[in-house]
Image (cartoon, rainbow, N blue to C red; front, side, top):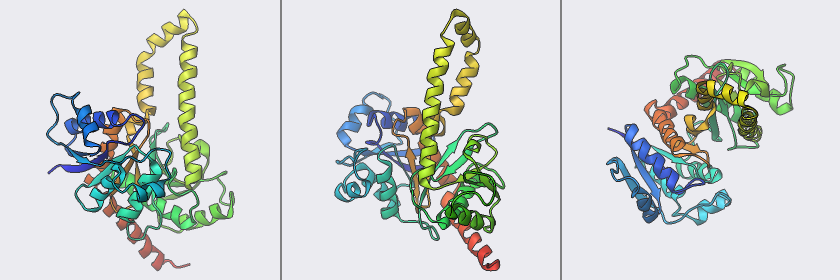
Amino acid sequence: MSIRIALDAMGGDAAPETPVAGAVRAARELPVEVVLVGQREAIEQQLLSYPQRPANLSIVHAPEVIGMDESPVASIRKKRESSINIGVGLLKDKQVEAFVSAGNTGAVVSASTLLVGLLPGIERPGIAILLPGVKGDTLLIDVGANIDPKPLHLLQYALMGEAYVRCVLGKARPTVGLLNVGEEESKGTDFSRETYAMLEASGVNFVGNVEGRDIFSGEFDVIVCDGFAGNVALKTAESLAHAIKVLLKRSLTMSPITRLGAWLARDAFVHLRKEVDYAEHGGAPLLGVNGVSIIAHGASSGKAIKNAIRVAYESVRHELNRNMVDAIQLYLQHAQMNPK
């Protein structure tokens, strides 16, 4: 039986065109049933571009849309028939097994937290993003869900991130690092030092503090941080990637010789672009909510939406939430056996 995944068809900079394109690709390539949630007439109009509409594609009407600039909490309370509210409602009612949206991130976080609730033992959800690195991918959590956390919340991020990398990505004993301003245990604020002590005593494979330069090294499987620092790091990385692309293109077109060199190295550039393209990774799981909720980039292409649906599928298939709950329970048992 295929996995049912609800997709916010009205979320993203180019909705509903891009979400529909991604949904069609996912329905054709993945063993899933995609439920498009949004304004039926607009969705149907987009589907006219696909004469052979996949049978595993359906629509649930949602008349309202939450804009990118709207207040998250206020919008989910006022617009109860929005695509985000109705999509998360389907997840709450077990009519679907996952929800994906490229819409208002705050609204998705708020709706998922308030409507679906949190997993046992989790106090705050965290957005996790998989970043490419020199030696492999790194899961960075949190990148924006909780900008003023407690040390306990970062400990929970570590447990959930470790479970994600272990169960979904297949790494037996993931390493966990704490983002800080230096490698030494004494570095950082009181908050950082308290978090360090909790992680060190937690039983996870904690390897200490890591600096910003380590995020793309690929030497750490999971890096935990507060949502403020994580979001700044993510947006800086996105900006840098764009700047490098522009500067590289400019340099490679300076002369006939550089243009020839670019042509000869075109396969390498294609491979590099694929490695650093967020569209390849799809969406960011909102870890900690009692259901699979995936947040995609607002500028997602159809390919990125398809891959966000793939991330949702993999999370459900690998029973991510059950494994995260197990990780929390193991930590609690460890804490009881090793009291301070």
